[in-house]
Length: 340
Ligand code: DAR
Image (cartoon, rainbow, N blue to C red):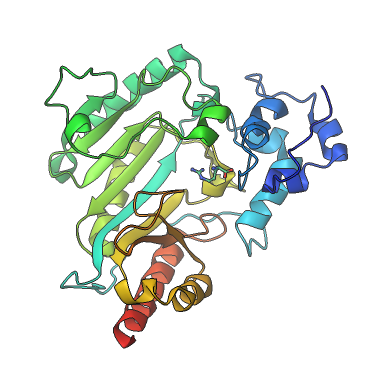
């Protein structure tokens, strides 16, 4: 294999830690499904502005290529003393943050899950995607009560005007250039779709960046209620689906930024005063180890002072720690907005 040369201006974590020595050790390694280092880092090579630059093609990638995954994971998930994950997906009661919804427009908590025995989305053959969609759909069809809903395939063409995917923004778009270079868009939109509960407060994306993105959302600031729905769904799905899990890394995901809890919990919050005093906001974001994304998600802009604020760390923390910290951070942020 030719020596791996990242573009000079690239400053991804994979470039930082993939020394020539590590490369020499890993470049001839393959996982049982045939996934290689070259495939894992293709996105980081093709996109010099990658922050991370590496994806896993299957569960085994994290062990086979641990020489590069471990340092990337330790740096991204700051404060990971021991690479060990404890999960505690149990319901939690938190005081309502913003009862009149003066600031918080919506709350969204999602977890990523991948099924044991399947390659991950960046390295799936077409038959695997079909088999996976079928397997997950049969489990989703057994959801009851407020979790009951319908599935909308992305393959339905424009004639299906009733398809909410055409009329509502359910968020599942074709992967960005980073995901494209990783192979996540192969055979798009085949065997992809969104399960939507009838009350539209639960979505399950199938075959996006991970096999499953389980998303609970409400136009409220009630973190407890949103999280309760998520816990109910994951527990129900886990009755018949085996998730890819590792005693060290926790839930295994395509991107190493999502391992562990694989949970991103956040709100859309309008902060008109803090938008004009961003230094105060950024100080609070840093103090509570949170992250800001654009109004329409990752790598998008802030519109009308509506910020997407969520947890930064997913690994080396438990789900309850993430929620308690998010809640505390939002109390402080709303207080700062009110004081301005
Ligand atoms: N854009 C890729 C991945 C960053 C994390 N976001 C994910 N996994 N959706 C990068 O390396 O910057």
